[in-house]
Image 1 (cartoon, protein in one colour):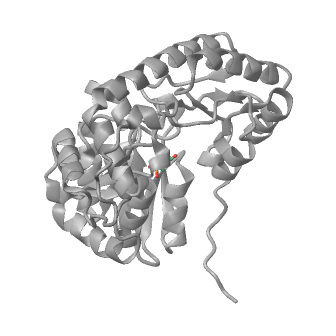
Image 2: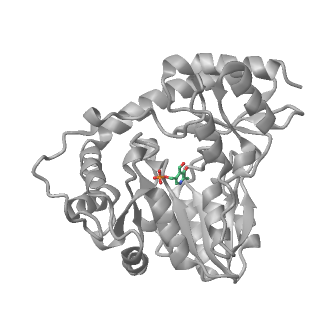
Length: 362
Ligand SMILES: Cc1ncc(COP(=O)(O)O)c(C=O)c1O
């Protein structure tokens, strides 16, 4: 009997199969927060009911933090759910999606699963992984309904400014397409962060969550910002599917957003130290090139070896008990994605162990 089957999310399978790793360069989130750190939770809070559009207080907080009208905010069960509902609302069988490459695989696979033809524009190390507007223009057809990108870029953490992305949104609007800008790393930029794209471009969705910059992914809490009509369209579908966000998650999200500066300070302190260590390591290695991200929890160094990076990454696990994500999972072999949000005391030894594997690899 027939079924609609998604392709395996190899990246996720890989992470789950290597949970026993001693060295973790695989995580894209900052070091996890604990329940104690995100508490306290109000004991008298009724949890029997959920809010289909999101807890009004949380919506106000998101609206105030990101300068978006409350009707333009929809709280979601993680960025993953927001992305899915946006894709389901925008795409139809036979349409096109223009997506960045390298890419976070799910952003591409969900579109393919829904029957869209996925066309890519390339982001290259030589250009600091910046978005090339000429390429976008050349590859955007009249059949395209959605341009999909990330800012910061997953996997490189390159950060595009508001002007460039607004120009991209205008190019898309000229062809009748919307833009899905996944901004789950954007809060890592702190004061330097450009505004969510959806607050400066009418045809854009901005998606964010507590997973990456805050280290609270287990609560599955995220949100989207968009033009209020677009939010209403997505919510019509959400009412039929997951109905509402998690009440507990919303309480935690309020706590985190109220103490946002404190949590983002912690993130910046961890990633700054690890990025410095990464810089020193890359400088010591003739077989590695990289783009140093301005902020964020990941980077995407190029590995100058003949051996496929997926094999080198497997050797890292087998010989050193190390976890790193090969570029193959981001549609870009020859690179590793390295997490910069972990414990700085363990980051150097993890890189040293990776260096030993590279030394023994042709
Ligand atoms: C670009 C991007 N979007 C979405 C997600 C999923 O985020 P969430 O945990 O908020 O669903 C991830 C997780 O790795 C991601 O990297």
